[in-house]
Each structure stands twice: as C-alpha cells, then as structure tokens.
Image (cartoon, rainbow over all chains, first blue to last red; front, side, top):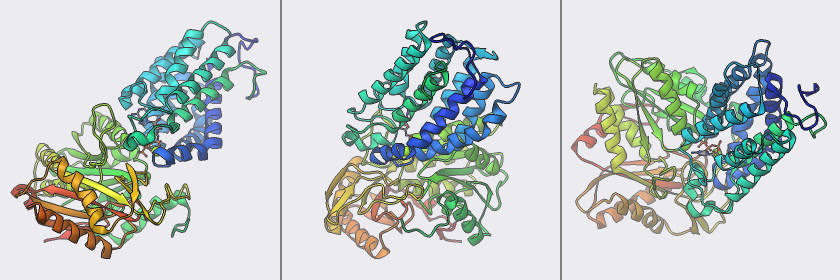
Length: 228
Length: 332
Ligand SMILES: Nc1ncnc2c1ncn2[C@@H]1O[C@H](COP(=O)(O)OP(=O)(O)OP(=O)(O)O)[C@@H](O)[C@H]1O
Ligand SMILES: [Mg+2]
C-alpha cells in the first residue's frame, strides 16, 4: 500500500473503497502465510492439522485474482463477492464455507456504492458474522472463529465515532481477548468437539486466524503512519 | 516423512489419474476431484454421490461403479471437497431421477455438501442428503457437531447403491440409506498416528506401549490414550460401547466389518475378526455377513475400527446384491 487512503487525516475515518479492501485481503493472506505452520499446529492438537494449509491455499488464490477482481468498474461488493466465491471453491474444510459466507454476506450488505464509511463497514461485518454463524449453526462459546469475531465486530460498532485508528485497535484487542477467553472451554463445534474434555486448554485455530483477519483490517485501514 | 509421492500438492490428482488408468472400464475423472462412473448419467437411475477428504482410500473413489456410487468427490487430504466439485459430480450423474448425497458428519463436509445441494436445486436437480454419524466414540448432543461418520459409510454406500441399481426411486434409496445409518455403529483404535503429506509430521505420536482409543479417520487424537493391550482386549474395548449403544441384543443377526486404518496388515485384522466373532457369539449375536480389510483408512495409520450393522432380510439382500467397483466386487 503506497497511497494514502482518502480522508486519512490522523484519526479521521477514511472511506473504504476497492483499494483498501484489496489491501485488507492482501494483508490477511500475508499474515496467514506467515502463521501457516502455527495455525496448522494448533489444528493438529485439536483437529486434523489442515487449517493453516486450507486457508493459505484459498488466500493465495484470492491474491492471484485481486488484480482482476479490483479492476476498474469494481465495487466493494463485487470485489468481496469474488473473494467469497474464490474462498468457497478453494479452501474446503469448515473454514471455506464459513469465511466464504462471511465475505458473501458482507458483500451483500454493501449495495453498489463505490466506497463506504466506517458505520456501513461495521454493519456489513456484522451481517457477515451473522451469515457465518447461521451457516455453522454456531453459538457463542462453541469455541470457534465466531468467538473472536463477535466481540471484535461489536467493539467496532460500539467504538464509532471515536478516532478510527483507536476503534480498529480496540476491535483487534477484543478479538484477541475473545480468542483467549474460549481457550479453556470444551469445543462444541467442528472437529475439536470430538475430543470432548481434551479440547479444553487448547487455543482454537479458527479463532486464531480470525484475529489475523482483524489485524489485517486494522493495518489496511489505519491512517498513514500506522505500522504496516 | 517417507512417502511414494512426487509433490504433496499433486498427490490427490495424480492418485486419481492412476486410479482411472487402472480402472478404465469403471470410472473416469471428469474434472479435478470429480470421479464419475464410466456410463454416467444413467437415464432414470437415482445418482449416488459421496465425497470427503482424501486419505481414506479406497473410500470413496474406489467404490464408484455398478451397484455402488455414481460419483465421488475427494477433497485435499483430510479436507472436505468444495461445493464446485460436488455440484459438478451431481450434474454429471443426474439421470433425471434425482441425486442422493451421502455425507459423513463433519462440519466441513456437511456445509460444503449443503452449499452444493442449494446450487444443484437452483439447476432443477432434486437432491436429498443422508448424513452418516456412526462413531460411538463421540458423545452426541444437540449442541455439538454430533458424531462422526466412519466405517458405516461403506455400508450405506453399498446398500443404497444396490437399491439405486435395482431401480428404486429417490425416496426409497434415501429411506434405505437412513436405515443403514440407524442400524450401524462403529468405533476405532490407533496404534500410530499418520502423516498428512502437506504437513510432513505425524498428527500425533504414540509410545510403543500406548494406543489411542476412540479415534476418527483423520489422524485426530481420540477420546483417551490407554495402555496397549492384547487383541482380544482391544476388541472388547471397541465392541462393548458399540453393543451398548444401539443396543445390539441376543438374537440379532449382524454384518461385522473389521476395517484396517491403513497400516495394519490383514494377518492382524483377522485376529481381530476372530476375537470379535467369539465375543459376539458369547452374547448370542450371529455374524451373518462379514467384511475384513482396509476400506476406510486414515493414510498409513496403524489400527482398526469395528462396525456392526443389524441385518434383516431387506438389508441382507441389498448387501448381497452384485457390486463391481475397484475395491469391492462380488456377484454377477
Ligand atoms: N460450526 C462452526 N461454526 C463456526 N466455526 C467453526 C465451526 N466448525 C469449525 N469451525 C472453525 O473452523 C476451524 C477449523 O477449520 P479447518 O479449516 O481446519 O476445517 P476442518 O474442520 O478441519 O474441516 P474439514 O473437516 O473438512 O477438514 C475451527 O478451529 C473453528 O474455529
Ligand atoms: Mg482442520
């Protein structure tokens, strides 16, 4: 990301358009690639050792398609819909349909606006989360990615209209806290649930990758001068 | 990691290509991860599609052929297939009589098959799905992902496949598939973990005197790590929870399936089968049909699973019906 996002006065809320969203995805892909082994190791402990590999495969496919998906004429919704369909057809596992549905619903909530403000983005993320939980029949405390995303997205909505960079940072912190909060719990969804009590004490791989998604969002949307 | 592979990322496609070359009269690969019976679609016949992660061979592609599956969609190793694959398979086998999806109960498989079924319905194809959840090692509850589908899947595919081959309609094929799901129970044990090629390290390690009881088929740890025991004792630890769960009772006739996890030789599987047969006889349960071998595997994992299915005339007749696939063939 070389350009300064529109409206990126310190602390001011930028508008979020195709370049910012593409940057978000690119950063998410990079964070997942760097954490691939860690994610897979977490999944080996309570799942089937494929979460890092699955997500990395899908996000590499997304990155490869970003130039095409973000080409002139693209809108936030069309970009995110393309991302969703790419994830759905390349990730597999549980996380493919879950992240795929997340982006599909987010796309659906943005209409055909060329750019959206923080409030619309927060509402869209909320719609994505609802779609994900519906697809997975997921409740809070099932010990999944939802446990990281739900508090983070709530913090985003609640934090507005405070300074955008602060809100984004608080959202990441809430997501990480959510991820860690469920570590002691017994998993009730996904493969980890087969372990019963033995899943307690292990960090959930999906909640871990979800925090990377939030970090990527923070880094992509934080005003110029922020890390990244 | 010591495996006969070229590159991990090419493993599934190269293996499927080899299978198609070895079985040219039975099946072909029509798209990446889509294996279809050579004469599909068959006009007026219900199509049977199954799929799941790779690494369980011969499940599912080895069961494509007359009397069993019309298509299989293997995903990456231990990872469910994606909706595109399942949709392509569904379209390829739809002969106008509808398609049955046979899905093992894993979150990923269930969601990907559901998405594919929604897409197929939009194409005007009638799709029903049965979910196999036969693993008694997992406690079932409304609030969890529920039980896993393991060895019982083969029995569902064989019996539903026989019904579809004989011309049963979609509702009837679905009913029979559900009957098998209702009457089959399984449990497995691992003597070693296994290595997912893309990962390169075993999913878990067991000491020489340990075994992992209550495992699934994805190299995941089971419910408990316990001391290794002689075969007869291991059989007791697997069979007791199975018998208690359905429950199977004195006077029942069953199909007894001793399945190898990939790394345990037949010589040991037959020891297990013998012990199982004696244990069942002691409870007044008759083994009417049997199957012994590595059919629903977990790569090179050592260990086995036991599946029991309560039989009656209807299920026995369909089990006995001719089948011609790469891994299972009899009759005709
Ligand atoms: N029902 C669910 N709702 C929300 N998140 C879920 C659900 N089931 C699993 N997850 C999340 O998915 C993560 C695992 O993703 P992964 O890509 O490893 O899929 P998987 O379960 O291994 O799929 P597959 O079984 O097909 O390999 C878990 O850590 C959890 O956060
Ligand atoms: Mg996994």
